[in-house]
Amino acid sequence: MVNGLQETWKENLNNTMICPECKEFPPNLKEEFSSGDMVCGSCGLVLGDRIVDTRSEWRTFANDDQGNDDPSRVGDGANPLLNGSQLQTSIAFNDGANGRSRDLHRAQNKATHDKSTKSLLAAYKELGAFCDSLGIPQSVSNYAKHLFKRVDDARAFKGKSQETIIAGCLFIACRQLGVPRTFREIFALTKVSKAEIGRIFKALEKFFDSENQKKKVIAEEAGELVNTEDDYVAKQSVDPKALCNRFCNALGLNFRITTISQNIAEKADKIGSLAGRSPLSIAAACIYTASHLMGQPKSPKEISAVAGVSDGTIRTAYKLMYPMREQLIDLEWLGEGVGDLTALPAA
Image (cartoon, rainbow, N blue to C red; front, side, top):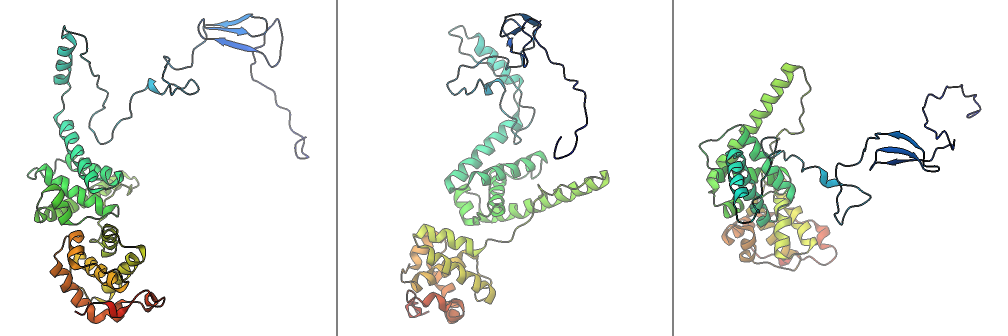
């Protein structure tokens, strides 16, 4: 009976091996893989031979071996950023002084040499070094490599240098993953001119958009669903709010000043007091205003060293903001007596 209902009778079709001498149930059977026998653990009677060993093909003596698990019996996973099956064999040449393995190593390298993979590895190494120097997360580096791989597979931009394409992919990856960098910062890192970065950025956006359209057309013709997970979606220009956060951290300003500078940048965008100004100058002017308002003033020269714009540009942007200071500054920031509106320098 199960929950008040009578369970229907079912025949047990499972085959169970039982020792004919002991007739124990459940049976006490042991598998001896060394001899390939199935043996009764109670009386030692051999019940079967040629047992298949289902364990790993060989043993490991690593110190980190846990529970007889042998993870080293398979190779590395395939790298989607490289070409080919990646199942090549490498020949070592540490055979002493005869040099036979060294010759085999050279011959094998010549036979399996892939110029495209070598150029990809060089580009990935350069991208990784750039991201490390900027303190960018690993996810941005991987996305930039993915974008470069798409360009390389399509054999696009043959007239452009590899450094230019790397700079464009790095700029796009930073913008797509929410850690934007300006043309000036990418120029200081890659030594590719700002004008060239702007041109390759626009060309790359057109290329990725055309790839998306081609993929949709092919999927529709085949009657398949369109996978939009890998599609490139263009983002807007750099938000001054994100720059305020990064610049305030570099200047050592507290969280309150960072939040106020971001709110001022948001209100300035709605009012349009700094329309036409670059995001760098807007962020610098907002930080200049917030730092004086909260009693931790930073000079335009200090801010320019972090923001990468001249102190004259910061003063000009501040002059445009000063007449609208009452609209840009919330009175709640002054309610606790910490902020002082009169502390703002006259424009």
